[in-house]
Image 1 (cartoon, one colour):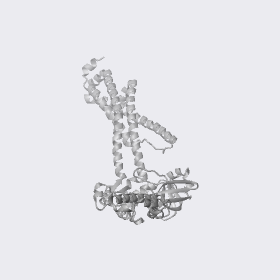
Image 2 (cartoon, rainbow, N blue to C red):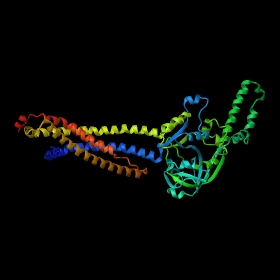
Image 3 (tube, helix red, strand yellow):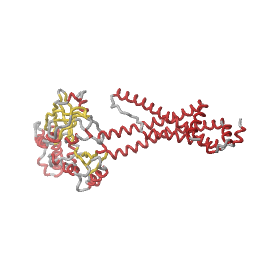
Image 4 (cartoon, rainbow, N blue to C red):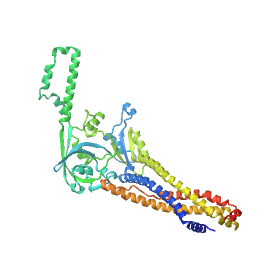
Amino acid sequence: MNLRDLISISLSNLWRMKLRAILTISGVVIAIAAFVAMVSFGAGNQKLVADQFNELGLFSTMIVYPNDSDEAIDSLETAVLDNNAITILSSVPGVDLAYPFDEFTVTVVSDDTTVTTSAQALPEAALNTRLFSRLLAGSSFAGDSVDEAFVTDELLEMLSIDEPDSIIGRQLIISVKKANIDSGLIYIFRDNDGEILRRLEDIELDSLWYADYFKRIARQELGFAAERFLDGFINVPNIVADTLKVCGVFKGGRSHRLKIEPVIIPTSTAARFNSGGISSDPADLFIQFKSNKFFTSNSETDKSYPQVTLSLDPFVAYEHVRDSVEALGYDTFSYAEQFKEIRRFFIYFNIALGVIGLVALATASLGIANTMVMSIIERTREIGVLKSLGAHEGYIRLLFLVESAVIGTLGSLMGILFGWLATRIASIVARIVMENQGWEVMELFALPWWLVLTAFLFGLVVSLAAGYYPASRAARIDPVEALRNE
């Protein structure tokens, strides 16, 4: 007797006890459907993250930072991210492009609307990378020195513009406030309100010979001078302005590592905004102080940056590039390495969801075992007849194992189908909620082939395990006692 005959006999036996078989198979269907739906949610979220990484080319993107470790601080020579460092990083094997994060605060005037936001300088080559590929309207720069600007949908929201196409070709007046050391020095000696003269009159010249009095006056006047210097340095800035034409709009987005500002300006054009002093923005002042170049030079050649982005050759392992960059004395952040950690998290997440489904499947296995035991009790005489006709124990065991396997197969296939239908319904509801809330519509569920295969095998294996004891019990039945059974 072949496998086809065994399956036919098993289906006939299940058909004879339809209600019991339906209830047993239903338990497997519910368990497999729950398993598929829950693991599908984890797989969908993992696919969503992977698709976003692929869309933006993050697997071939690396961020470089100055080394702020204690060893670097104590070292006499600390690696600085300046233009010379960018040239060195560009020559590292596996690096296709290196460009700095050069951010500054700007005021943007469009028609009658004025907003204060952030801008960054970018070379034309950077806009051609996948990181800036989500174009909504227009095109990228025609060069690094053109009077054009690239904007994100974040700026459109600030300007209350709904259609990206409507801003293409529009003129934006962009201005930058530049703090000037000369303004601070002049402000120290400016005495429009007569305060300096009054302070001089309050000084007792005869008492200056006394050291304590001299130190106290010196501290007071130095503090007063520093206060007036900062007042003039920050509050009396130079205004550098230019008119730029909007050439393109792309979909922005930020994370704690990936920074894309609402306004993007070509590098040579942005250099005009960086001339004439230091940005009066407190964050920019802090960077200048930290770079130890506050009083030495404000030229572009000596400028340092908080981070540099590397676009990597996708055919070169990021570990090689990371090791080379860190050997130069810098810290690195790799999105490919981060995705490894994310994937590890999803493995644990999927296991946790799968365990919940397996608990339901284990409960369903008890129903299979109960069904098979009841079937053996009811078919004891039939087993005795088969044995008296020469059927050996292995055949009897196989007959009942095939019957439990049929239950598991039918339950698993139907469970996979119902699980998929449940995820489709949940996905439609989630999409409706996202659209009503104005969120970006995303697919939260996925049904990869490995999940279908895993669910089917789990259902089959658990069913066989549940039917093994009843099958072995049936194989051990004494044919004489079985024939006496009524």
